[in-house]
Amino acid sequence: MVYPVTSLQLGYFGSIILLIAFVAIIVTLLLYFVVWALFRKPVTGIESLNGKLGVAVTDLTEKDVGEVSVDGVIWKAKLKDSGTGLQISKGESVIVVGISALTLLVQRQ
Image (tube, one colour):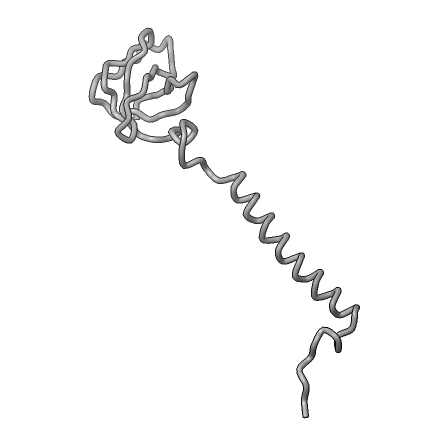
């Protein structure tokens, strides 16, 4: 008759090896999720707006702060490049390239 292997038959050394293997697997999974959380792109908050497309709600000039709509929310915005004579008219598509004190830095798409 064949009996199943139990921890008593493995002895203390075998039990310790199984415990170490189990702990190693758990620690590896935890480290994977920690690293994944650190390096993924934010999905909420103002940090998530970088690279998103929007529409100019008002005219944007290099001197004035205007407004843009991104994901249905209206934000204060100004042009990223100043001194170039660039202007974005109302209704044009823009892309968010940065954030400065709750004011989006945008440029023409």
